[in-house]
Length: 397
Image (cartoon, rainbow, N blue to C red; front, side, top):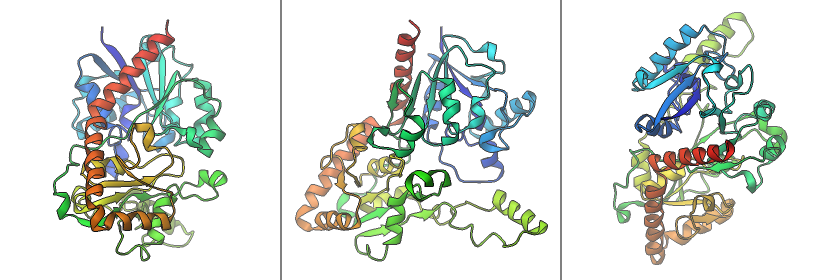
């Protein structure tokens, strides 16, 4: 019998597919866990299902809406088609009674509507990305999941995790980020610029301000942007704010027509990151010998570090233990620094010296080989699903 893997409201989960609002309003999105869905659909050992719960609508974003199930079925099929997925390969479930004890149910904590159950399903429940949405902490606690997984180990001192989720004692699985197939090592190392390429979006989340004193979710990236002039000759800064184009678009005022106009801009024009998407990321990584993708304040690295290393670039990251969780070693797979501008400059200058070029290239080569073997989608997906199945077997004994 095939193992059923069930996602809640799959059509509305932008970690797995490009959702309806992103399709209609042409907004940018990074589908970070697409590799997991691809792996499951390509493996005959699993039956992939979507459970349309009591709030399966997506037009009101993370809160969901009580749309008719027939409408959500149509939305599901349309979204799958736009994502190039054969909808017939995904079983649609609409009743809680259809969830069985042997199932693995996957919930994404980012979406409040995924918790809309009449009662806790009697199956193995795994929750992803529990650091994103603090407002769902009580819902998560009431659900009492059997396992959680994320791209970071929060034992390194995440203030927001400790405040909202310190009660959680069940297994926590750390999975690496995965690079896309387009990220390849295309240019010989000696032909690259002897500089550091810095990339990554800067976002602002006001719910984190009480714990970190600032809404900036990626202060290490903002630090590079703020010091870009000082870093000339060392770092080429391509970081940008997520809402970089928005300020010029919105009109000031509270009148009815101003509000209508601003609502239109918010849906159809804002948050396009035109500058950020104006260049080819793969080409940029291949143009440089070093790269930097600043970590997030919530104790999680950026996905770009894996993409840069896959392109044969020597990665520079903070020495806080994130990368060791993935089996990497400082000085072997990546260059470590203490998070300050002074230390960053010192490390880059060291590796820019002619006498250290061989050492730099060795780190880039070793790191790239490690990432390409261990951080590819099928490997990570297989390891995660196998671990969830193992935990389920132990839990259900």
